[in-house]
Image (cartoon, rainbow, N blue to C red; front, side, top):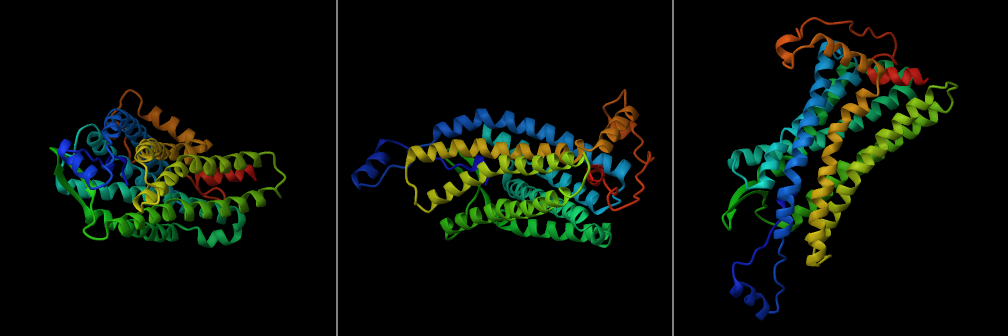
Length: 360
């Protein structure tokens, strides 16, 4: 799945090439340029995504524990979303080094980092989908949400979500391996049998679980939310509608290109598309679109928190508490709670609900 897993074929010498020509077998597609481009392009971008993703999502976790104290289902989902993104970005330094050089971290880390990467990928998208369902219940079914949107149900659905993400990522954990070829060590997923079939199934799984199902759920939930908001005679409803469009458009913009390229690579694996120049362009596109998709994990704190007025106040208060030092854990006194939230209705249980409450 990772763009560093682009297959390269390099003929050893002229006799190797003559073998293919003499038997009317096409020469392997040489992709040295793709590897060189990735070595320059990917490490700095992975580093930026890692730094911004680590900072933003760490702030989310800190605010949730210091001020929110997980008092609603929304807060539980936000915490799990931040943990998913942190799990995802923690794998990026390894892939950045791998893109620049080769895999030097051994078989154990090859399996663990590949697995972390995919679990973070799946769980992050799943929790975005659950956030959409949570908002749908809060606004469209407000009375029912009083019983359904509890911390207990939030924990149960979160555990189920993590279980699905872990189960969907098991093939990568099982089949990831290290091997050396042409004095270069790789960390890739190599299937012992029916390799093409496994690749196709993996691609279908990623497209289905990573785009089709979440996008369908989001479109349904947000269309029903907008329909409900249209009946509200309140000037602030436009704020909620704009936030909804921001969530959907950003999700589409950052994830759709990657899934399209992944689908085209499936067609290459099935030998439906056979053209070396096209494969090279597709590999370049994979590197670009995958990195674009990575950026979305940095935007989640912005989308789900920084648009909320209460969270901005928490951030300001947090930095005032910690002024004069960058070592937050040492100087911030995390145990005292400053002005914790006291939910008074189904619309004021969380930062996001507060925004929707204002819009109504």
